Image (tube, rainbow, N blue to C red; front, side):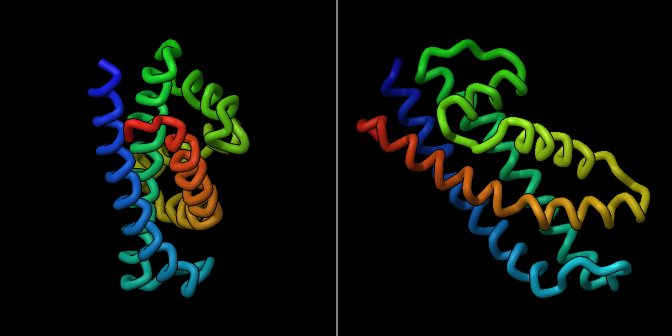
Length: 149
């Protein structure tokens, strides 16, 4: 059973790394644009890619990686908040509240349609991408303790 979990974790870590790479590509483009009051259509397209990739990586982390690490570590499944709190205790993230904000931001990305609110989302995503990058690094370090990987 553990062998299958390790195999699945290896696959999920590879997906996480791919998602981080494409998020990094979008992030670098958006950093050059920065936070502005009105984005032109080309800039909107670039920022929409960023938010989509941000949401994807945050989902992989919370819905796949944290859940799988909890299974391997024999922790109860529980809610997303439970997984985030355990991730903080394990040192996978620095601050549970920050990651809960990221989760809420991910939900707003999927359901927001008001242009002014979308602009705020762009700015908040831009501010929180480094947290996801740091989390990926911590997950990779933590996963090294599973030698069969």
